[in-house]
Image (tube, rainbow, N blue to C red; front, top):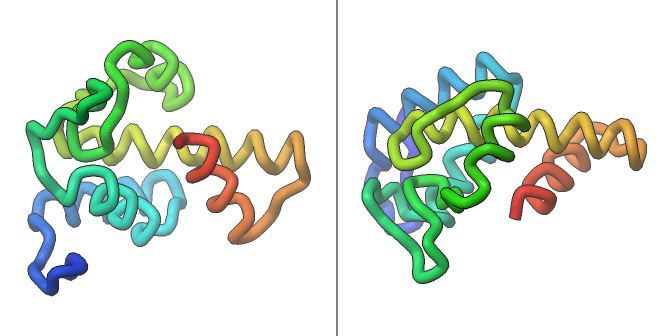
Length: 117
């Protein structure tokens, strides 16, 4: 699979492969994962925001324990592995949206993305 960024260039193969595996494992649409990484970091490892968010998914290290609890496992916030963590967290939020608000279908993923931000 090739993911073309907004500028027409291909995203890093390792990021795309990690997202494809995470999408299959967690049943999250791969486009949501790759689109989030593109928006958050433009597929750049090592990026740190002015607010202190790190890695391709721009997780806040001060909330790491919460992320791990939501995901159900520990993951590296700064590497491509964080994409799998993000997928698991999106599933956590999607389930929350279904249980609390009755969301279904695409609305689950919209809620998950909004809840994470």
